[in-house]
Image (cartoon, rainbow over all chains, first blue to last red; front, top):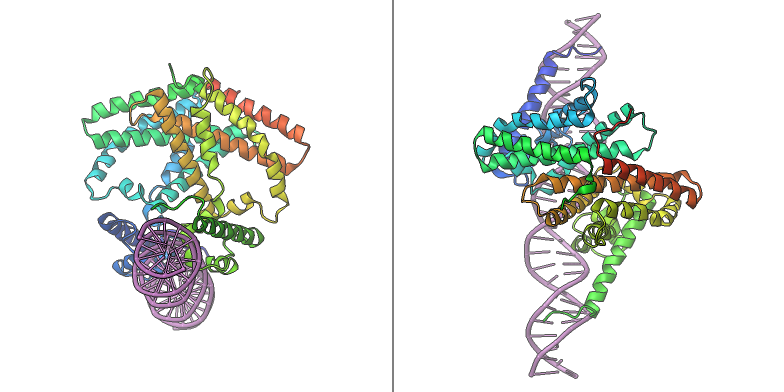
Length: 213
Length: 213
DNA sequence: CCCATTCGTTACACTTGGTGTAACAGTACA
DNA sequence: TGTACTGTTACACCAAGTGTAACGAATGGG
């Protein structure tokens, strides 16, 4: 018999999972990823090392356990867009909406190590990040191929998806940089809007004229 | 005193390096990446495990030690192109020229495991592959930014670079697929040319109209 | 030709990420 | 209450990768 989703067992399991992830991230932020061993995490969470690996296949997964909704949002921008809105426009809107992460970015800045401090400069975490992006690209490419009715093996959907995800990433990074540099929210939002327009203007008109001049 | 580049010491070192790489790749192709331990490689090459790691920082590097010229070629397509040729056109030419790898692809097919069989399906090797691509993208983005005179932090060069590298990869993969499916060289070349034109036509005209219809 | 230096290599001990297994303990359910 | 389930545990184990001191061949100067 399948267990009820709200059962006590499930509850405890989720608590354990959350406890492990929180403990691990607190340690990572305090001292850095490589300077914390899984044995330590297990000890601090009062759990066996094996239990840690039961919940998270690799040590890197402990850092990325939150970022699972990015995929859903990007996919929704393709599949759930209103009639008459092109994919490019839908993605532009998605990128514009990134300003809603500004508050979180600011909060992250006060930590001794922000999420991105943790990731950037650490090879295994950067690789994991690429993995996540690659996965999103693939999901998106599949959705595009389905909508376009592309024949199997057609490289176009993949290329479009890779471009859109690349643009999204670059714009997000740029936004984070602006937040780091400081300034009022309105200023940052205005600059970000300009960035998005520039990028999607280029993508809309084609790359043939780049660089200009 | 710096040792002369053609010294006996240097020669022996290079021989050792080559021996290790060849031994490792022969074992990998025969039995698969995960099924061969570094200890085995060292034993087969009659060398200590430490020496293997002295030459190749990670086990994955043993597989990728050849692919270092891809970066140079992509970069040259941007920096060494004739006057009056756009970057997009230069990259189209680069992609068209990929047909020169067809012979190598055919040769690879007869092995029990081709290079790509080895990489695809193995998480750590796929990650390493992404790492290589990421590096190429970054180098390209820097060159583009320099040529465009972009201000630091401008996301455009990065996005263009990511798109170009993405297109190159997708077209290469498509070409490999065609080779796997068989057929005469002329047929494959013709189909590849059509692929390249379709992709660069889209990139030139802009993504706004994708998918068509 | 000999001597001192350099440096690639080695043996060895060690750390750490990750797995396999069998047993234990609390939950679900009849 | 009894039984099947399942998350957790202890423990033994494997493989990747590092640090170190020492060995020995290549090198270059006197």
